[in-house]
Length: 264
Picture 1: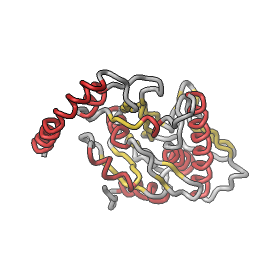
Picture 2: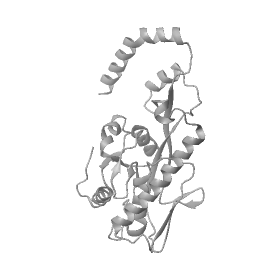
Picture 3: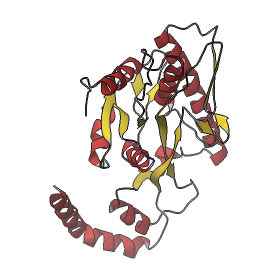
Picture 4: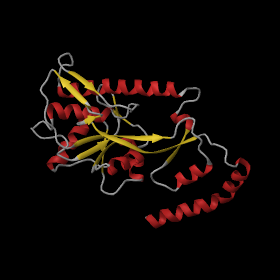
């Protein structure tokens, strides 16, 4: 499989050599409308971030948790960074880089400050939805329980699933006195709605690499992104596809108890 892939890329590179040479001659080193992304930081939502608990719950007893639930991120070059042809070619031959259209990451006509504000709002909305989904799953009254989520320097909605799982673990664990993680380092990604529906996020193949780098052995992935996640899957990382919060909790319980666990 690896030799076949290498041969395929060699053929592509050979076939593209003439057009690339022409492009270099015409465009030289002019910046291109792309950004280069790579695996970013991960954070254990059951632990602390910059000296503060990521999840703080008042109004209900909480558990001492074991294992880790790690949300994952990617980082991209800034909207004003110059990405040249050499950067694009380099990223093509690396599994830990991806080239994305600049407008897909930084919408045209938006300043850096506007993009940051948008991402911050998306994170805040995601936290509200994650809290609502977790409390609804547990049958808890949101009027009686207050959940505060803190995660600095991260924007966007892709940590929603992990926030919900962290709240469930802190309040109820696996439902039978154990940890939802089974003591493992579990990572993942996915948006979440108030009714517990998990949605795709993008950048999954880079997030799996960040997860494995930081010790995860299990990765929860939105089912719609299984193909992308499998494409560059690091050795030692098990994929579990999810579509709902209920399904994610059930899969983690089954994994702990040796039951049947879905796979990509």
